[in-house]
Length: 525
Image (tube, rainbow, N blue to C red; front, side, top):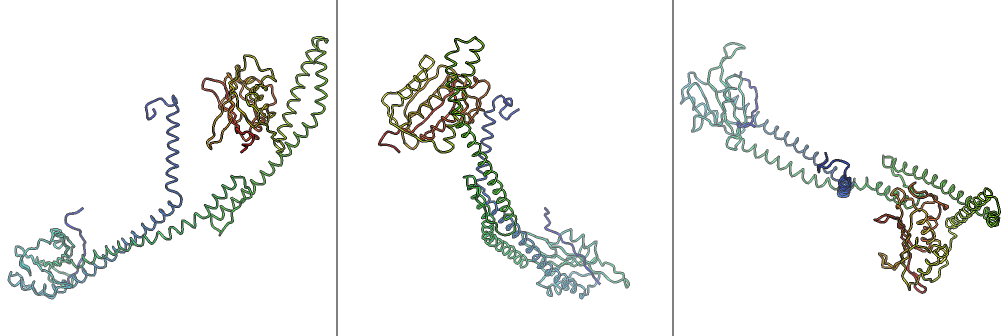
């Protein structure tokens, strides 16, 4: 009895800062690099949006699945195909060798005849049979020695009397080689080798063709599958992004002030839970904002009521303090100093009450604009003269011949507040300059600039310079006003449809720029 052990072998050929400057000396390069990094990240985010990333992820999963499935299918089909061929060939060759009677010692002619008989019965296709017995070499073909049989197969056959086989590739052609040592029975369970080894060499061109066809079929099947996967990928991305788009629209609506915006949850998944969370947060925010607005309205109403109630007694107090001021020269020094202090503080309190009432009218949207066509340069001169700001501390650069539709009283407040602020918080000389300009939309504007020669406004104070009761840094002179002057100025400029900006001059000093529409009667926009 001859048994086989199988071994499979492959082909015989085998297998300080980056720029060198100290950190912190000049933050500009680091700031520019950070800005560039943010810009690049934003560009990448815009280039690969959530929809694109979802589709790419879905396609990647589909591609990995398709390739893996195709590879496993190809491997199993290839192994099954080759195994069937090998099993058939080995079984058939083993039967033929067992059924053939070899006479020992062998004769080359007789041996060749036996080999041709075996070769003629080869399955599943004809073999070329070789035999080696000592120095004797014979085959069923023209060449007694095979160039396909490898030394590894010969060594395996010599070590294992049950026979073995090997698949090899010779000059690009696949072959199945089978080695079958012949043995004779020396006992019931003992066999001895005869030194005669029979080899079968069978080309596997047809099997290789079938394997190649399987590879092409697997590849051709994976590519259309990947293309078809794009459709569910797009549908999935659309279904996932729909709630996200609704959330984005709702967030924008909330940002524009519509706090009653809500999202309709759909389903019971994580996105529906996100919609519920958004709605709950929006409700809490709406409730909080409503309470804050009500509290703010109550505070403004309280300030307006208090100011109104204080106005009448203050008028009487002012009248009394004026009389006392006129008589202060006749009082003793301590009493006169106390009278003047009371008079000064009463005057400040009166200004504060007037400013509070003015700002209350803006809050209640009760402020009205009574315009008239005036000469803006003449209006500035009247403002300065009315407050005796005509000495060398004040400079003007005012064009002649301009006409503008302004509310003279409110324009006077704007100029007086800006010049007074420059005088008290900045430094002399204070320059008032007027000119005309054109907005980006082509409409003409009257530009009024008020500049001082003080230390300027600190960068931390600039964003809050028009806030109510805002106090600038300690470097500036203590305020003598109510803290509402610039806020009232801002409201008056807005009432005219203009804008106001605060900044610093390159050489020092604060600069306030007011731009008002340059309308005239008959050309009101």
